[in-house]
Image (cartoon, rainbow, N blue to C red; front, top):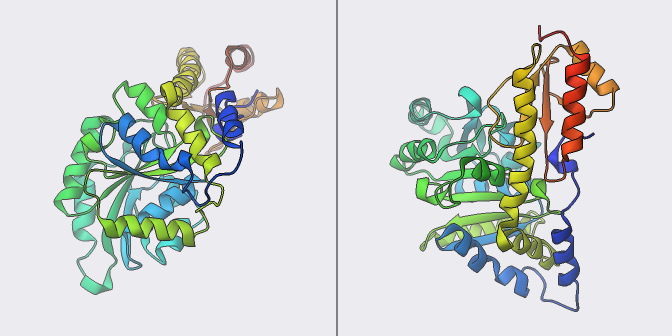
Length: 351
């Protein structure tokens, strides 16, 4: 009865089969194999525009390599205060950029807002060389609160960002869940709304270990592409046997497996959210718009659920807030059992 993280879910059988099939015989190394060479075409078809794709093993590397390609050591990365790059990547963005500063901003439901973002960018360099210089803006989709940016919200941020000659990066560790919830095309959720580069997440969505940097457009800056290629190598993420990563990404895009898996996870999260909303004691901390459910309940009640074998994450600094994450592997029975335990044993609401 595991609701702790989609990182703990198994790999999907079709992903494992793709790895097995890629294991036949020899193949060129360092992303020169036929699987890796197909990625640009496959992602371009999915996103309805020309894409340049860099496969990697982890989302941290995808985010950090991207940000380092856009920011000098004296630069600044603007992001939400709850962003994964700010709280959960162990200083990797700062490490890859050789010192760029992350400037966290507040915003409701885990989202940046155009007005405060514009003010923060404009005010960041008032002391000239004594300040870091804004270099790139990063948003998370879905957010760390489990909410999803709508295309119009992204477009409003992109207008602010591009007016100041900055690029807009999207950390898409749960991008599939957001797209599935929004019921929009991948193109609408990214480049058509102004996103310049996406960290495309697959590991949380049923892959063994597979992520990708996706650069949009017919004419990307060659210097940025070269920086990404060199930083991927220098940072230890140009795998010699990249075919196993690329084969997973191709399998994800085949017949929209990535969206089918996300829809399954989202459906279970929505069932759980509905039960919490109907419960007299529990309540939702944020709207459920992907596969994460944030439930407020007394610490004693949460401990009781833990004692019954339900695994979930207590949000740091909030002993009455639980994060429950569903994956493609979450079953109706698991959700039913959690709902039954919640209804049967919890009588007190959050403090």
